[in-house]
Image 1: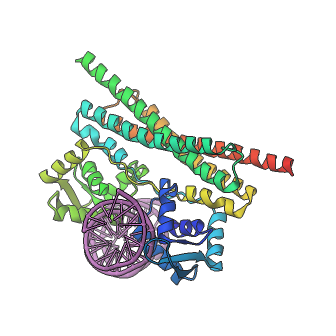
Image 2: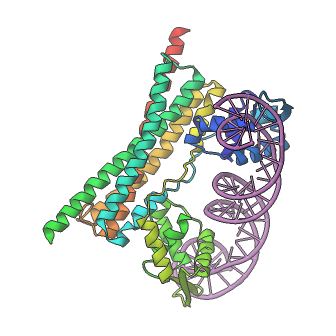
Image 3: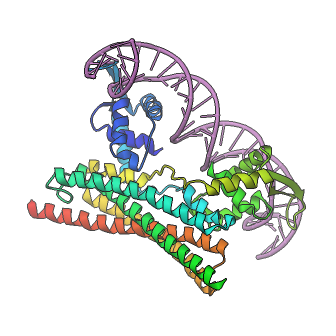
Amino acid sequence: MSLEFIILGLLRAPKSGYDLKAEFEAGVANFWPAELSQVYVTLKRLRRRGWLRDRVAASAKGPARRVYRRAPAGTKALHAWLAGEPLIGDERYSYAAQVYFLDELADAQLTLRFFTILRQRLTERYDALRAIEQGWAKASPEYPDRLPSEEFHQQLTLRLGLHTAAARLMWCEESIHRLRARVGRRKKDA
Amino acid sequence: MSLEFIILGLLRAPKSGYDLKAEFEAGVANFWPAELSQVYVTLKRLRRRGWLRDRVAASAKGPARRVYRRAPAGTKALHAWLAGEPLIGDERYSYAAQVYFLDELADAQLTLRFFTILRQRLTERYDALRAIEQGWAKASPEYPDRLPSEEFHQQLTLRLGLHTAAARLMWCEESIHRLRARVGRRKKDA
DNA sequence: CTCGCCATGTAATGAGTTACATGATTTA
DNA sequence: TAAATCATGTAACTCATTACATGGCGAG
């Protein structure tokens, strides 16, 4: 359901499906990834429902574009969603499931390797977010608290990503230390 | 895909679909929620594939139960999944999307209210996880680092939940403070 | 002339939710 | 006797991914 509202939100100004995909890649994908095909399907549905209007426009480069803009009903629906309660959806972490059952292999070295790789991946993610933040900070002297409202809200979601990534890294570190301590005790006890 | 492996993992000992659902509610749902109907569908698929065997057994209370146990192929598949790399899936947060677009309403009070409610919900989640941790700590003197391997691994995933929830709460606090500061500046500037 | 980007779509498949259907046994 | 718990399942629908199909335009 949220994808519909995210597309409506991105359509402050008229855009094509292709444009929207670029906007996803440039930030939105951090909290809501979307494939191009899914964007197209959702745009069609929104138009059928009367939340969007579309018109065909020539492109500077490549084939004709279908440009969408909000219809009044779409704006109304978007605003109702925004004015509503925060939506906390389910979350699924495969890697947590793997940790949960990893005791079955009874191989502390393998578990340690698992966490080391995970830490590596999460660090990459964290660094990527930090790079975005720092690029932003360099580009605008108002960063972060005197940014215009639109950018300020976008920056808030970037902060969520940073807090979350940092927490998971801390969890990895904590787990690695605790696992090592267990291995040490085992050796001593044996 | 992970649901299959989670079910395989939970089937250390033979269980029915109904039993499995109870295990989800008792912890696994924190990182992988599953509906009973989905559990049944997945069990059937796993049996068709030869990863599980089933037999019907009388119940102490209520109708006959279909009890599943791992087939060797299932154990093999589970172990391959566990020995593989950590799987980092996509994550989708509706409430981050709401924050991203909330500037459109240009109503700082409403945004503040949004974060206040979100903080409330996240606090409840955090407190629930803390209660689990504390109950566990009271019940076993080995908690947390001298727990048997199975419980230790389960406890690691509980810690992930706690770290994550704490990070999001910090983000709420940070955002509320920054929003209030912005409102203050606006009043002063006007 | 080929590769990469621009641009739009459909089809098949997978994973999950919600609603529905059925019925036994125990407890209040 | 009504409600809660035990117990299994199917059907319809939604959301999303992956693969496929098509083609224009510009740069090297």
